[in-house]
Length: 133
Length: 154
Image 1 (cartoon, each protein chain N blue to C red):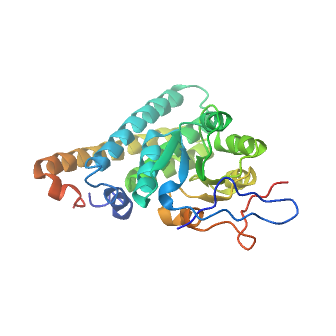
Image 2: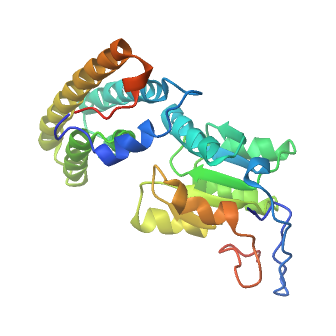
Image 3: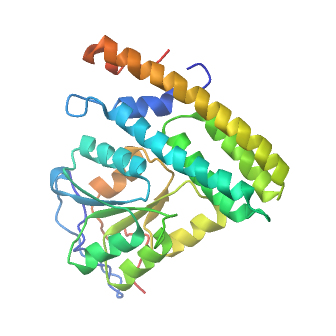
C-alpha cells in the first residue's frame, strides 16, 4: 500500500473494527466501491456531453474526493483535486486526461485492497485489524 | 459526563438555562449524510464513543421530517451537499421550527460555502470525516452563560 493509503486515516477505520463489528473495514470499503462506481459513471456521462457542465463535474468529483479521503485513498484524492482544478479552469481536455489518472489510481488501489482483505480473511480474526504493509 | 439537551434554550434576554448533565449512553444523535459510507463511519464512531442511540437520515428533508414527526436529538451532525434538501436549507428549517439541538456541520467544503453553511444556524462546522475530538465539546460540555452556543435565536 506504499503511497496509496494515508495510514493514519485508514487506521481510524481499523480502530472502529472490533468483535461487535469484525468486518467493519471491509464493509466501509465495499460502500466506497459502490459510491465510486456511481460517481465514475456520472462523471463519464458528464464528460460525454457537449458543452461540458463543469459545475456538475466539479460537484461529482468533490464527492469522489471526499469519500476517497475518508478511507485514506490519498493518490485517488490527489488526482481528484487535480481534476477539480481543470474543472475550475473550464479545461475539458485536462479533465478527460486527469480522469483517466483518477480511474487508474482507483483501480490500482482497489486491487490492493481486495488482496488485503483476501489475506485478512485467510489469516483469521487475530490478524484482521493489522495495518496493510 | 454531560450534555446539553435539546431542551436548553437561549433567551433573548441573555439568560441561558443549563440543562442537566446527561451521560453519553443516554444521548440521542442524528447523522444526516447522503453517502451510506459516511453514515456508517460516523455512526460507528459515535457508538464506539458510547452513544447507543444514533439515528441516520439520508438527506435534509428526511432530517426535517423526523423533527416534524416529533423526534428530538441532543446533537445533529449535518452534511452540506445532499440531494432533495441540502444541509444549509435543512438547518434553516430546523431552526425556524424552533429546534435548539446542537447542529454541527460536517463538510469538506471551505470558503464561502462553509461560511454560508455556518450562517444557516450551525453551532459549529468540522471537516469530513470528523474525528471524535472535534465534536467532543458537544458531547461533554453543558451549555451555560459562559459557554453559549454559537447559534442564538434572533
